[in-house]
Image (cartoon, rainbow over all chains, first blue to last red; front, top):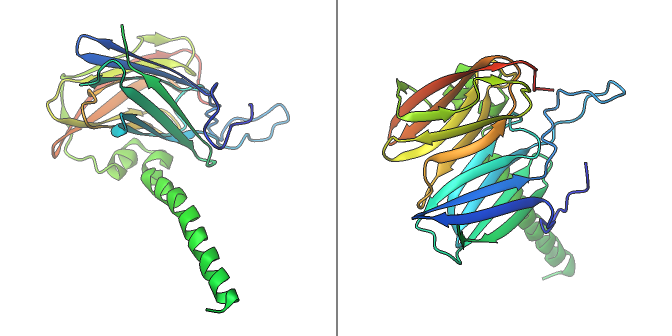
Amino acid sequence: MGVVDMTGLNADNMKMRAQLKGDVTEVKVLMSHPMETGRKKDDFDRLIPAHFVQLVTATLNGKTVLEAQWGTGISKNPYLTFRLKGAKVGDIVSVTWHDNLGETATQDIVVTQA
Amino acid sequence: MQRRNFLSLLFGTATLILMQPVNALVALWNKAAFETVKLNEATKNLAIHDEIVSHDIQIIAPDRAENGAIVQVEVQSNIANTETISILVEKNPTPLIAHFKFSNGAEPFVVTRIKMADTSDIKVVVKAGSQYFTHSRNVIVLENGCG
């Protein structure tokens, strides 16, 4: 696991795309996170502590559109797709996650025409 | 005001400001629902009751998953006024996987990838108004994906 930037400015942490098709904008997000359950053991038979994303929030032009709570059952390097109605080309979609160790990351993306 | 008093006041205020967002975030996460090992305890802690089986909830997942560490699931609710979608896996060590809340034009639709320990039902619960709707889909898991 790499060092996670506490200020959330780590540009490599999230890959995002927001594409307008018809009247629906599809947002795809790929996060970089170990999503450790706390039940797995390392090579020395020691338990790896739980380390997972608990909260994910998405906004459209600053307005909340999606609030997610996650457990340890989301796969490593979480993948998420969601759809927005009413977004226009040039609008800003922002996604923020917070994990159980207090780490956080935020990424913005501009809505483009598919 | 004495300097000492002023400093302690200043320090106290700063601590309060620093502590608040962390506490607020912790409070947002439904610890009881996510940490329980029982499916019905998880739904109870999400305040889910009187679930109605509905085929207006669409769950797209593979029939067989080679590796339970990554099972892609797509959920769409065609129920009017859907507010939340919860995803649970009955046979997982902790059944509650995720709870999504939609607002301000977000469609009741989500695609994500989940871990599955064993062959199990994926159970989805939708909240619409004061009612709860549910639908399940079985996935055969060939390799345990929960460490």
